[in-house]
Image 1: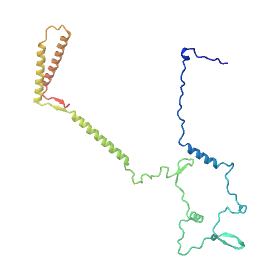
Image 2 (image 1 turned 90 degrees about the vertical axis):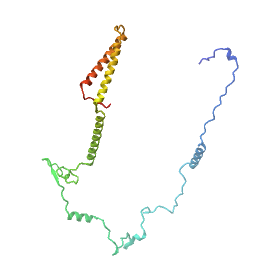
Image 3 (image 1 turned 180 degrees about the vertical axis):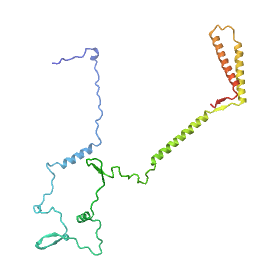
Image 4 (image 1 turned 45 degrees about the vertical axis):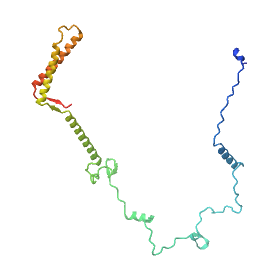
Amino acid sequence: MSEVVHPPESVYNLIPRDEVHTQKPPRYISKFRPTVILEKKLAKDAMRTMGPAKVEVPSPEKYLKKHSKEPKLLESEYFYRQYGQRIRAKPAVPARTDNPPMGIHTKRDFIKTTAMVPMKPQPTSVDTNKGHKQRLETSGLVPKYIKKKDYGEVPEYLLQRNEEERRAQEEYNNFVKEQKEQAAMKHLSDEERQAVLEGLKKNWDKLHHEYQGLSLVTDTKSKKAHKERLEVAMNQLENDISFFERFKTIYIPNN
């Protein structure tokens, strides 16, 4: 037996509580419900009686007779011979003005053509000593490709490919030429070379004047670094001045 579990005793359990009634939402009803009910009733009423549907019973007088299901010909397609036999009539004799039928081949025509014109043997080639043979046309021994009208001509797709390659090479050459023109060296005239030389000398004089104004004692790192920077800059300017004085023809890039 299962034991009854009582809730823990508390003063708050003695206070009456209001019952909370949850209101359920209305049940979903499809809008096609009346249509489905009507269709079900119609289908149910159709099979209300057990068994197959009632059909008209054939009359005893209309019993199945012999040859009644065979295709029947018209009365004009029959003619009668003796003894009452019913035989299909032959077609009427064509008139003199009627055109004869064309393109009809009979068995007699086939025998006549085959007997009059014998079949020609197909040319074959034997390629082994055991008698293996194959058709001469598909063996590759017949020079049928050299007799074509377009034999020896370059195909259209190769011409198109060559044209595309030539156009791409031409565009690449033009691009390289433009790059070379952009990266070409510019020749300095004597006036420009002299102006540059004077500017370098002025910069050297300015740095030299600043260098002469330094203190003789370089007891700090900042003074020592400043003196070294001035010496490096002056040495670079001296090299540039000697370069411009030694060479009369100088080229510089356009960039």
